[in-house]
Length: 59
Image (cartoon, rainbow, N blue to C red; front, side):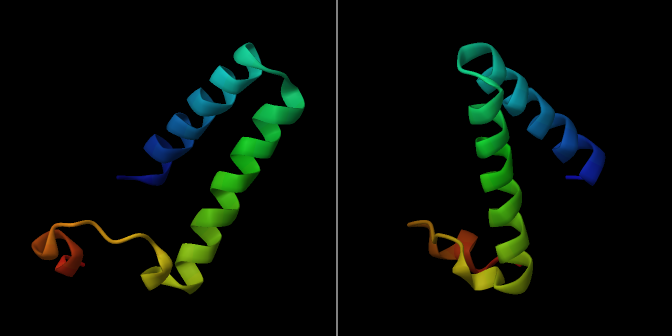
């Protein structure tokens, strides 16, 4: 995935929350997603593991 694609997906998520709830909620959700991504950059092994061993070993 490239960053333009990911940014587009984030904008769609923001739009959904804006329509369903309000600007504050949309901002909170998108900030949470961005903070999680930043944490994964620093700690890549902190993500959740899947039940599939092969998939977990792919880097």
